[in-house]
Length: 230
Image 1: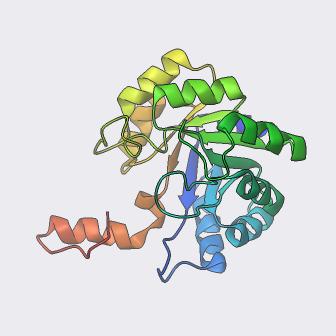
Image 2 (image 1 turned 30 degrees about the vertical axis):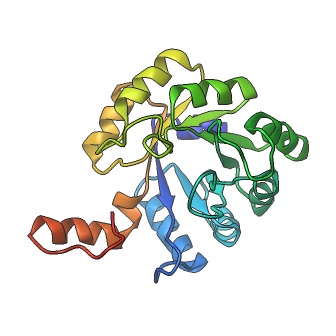
């Protein structure tokens, strides 16, 4: 069974912690990844070379790897150097910023993908923010399109849940698997994405980020959520 076949109509769980948080530790992320797989996750998405390497050695499902460098502009595996390192760490799928924005090393997404493919045969997931991003990434040779950056690049409004309108556009126009990622907070939203044609769904915060989940409950009962939770 190919990697894409393993992910088709299945759940991918994003296992990440933010800088300075108690769970920002490869062993902790690895244990959470293992727990997610026990719950039925068909794939794991994780960031940072140490986390990727450990999780890829431990779980028996595909690992989507990325390297966040910075917190504004293009920061999801932003350069060829980052992409090669992610692949070398053991990710079966390398997630790249798939937008049309300028990248820190001056390479286009298409050139980055070409040079990465010269180094490795790993699959590439393009984290996109719009239909035009996705069309360009598909033309460049990406294997998977993600809705990861919808609402974060200024091209589309940030929706409360997953951007299902963008999903409809992608399914109609892009002949590649579309992974819905971003603000999928409930099982019903995940099921709705698949019903509307998503290839698979990636859920992170609602499963693996207890600080944010706790803040949702605190807010719901009338408390004040700590600054920085979302």
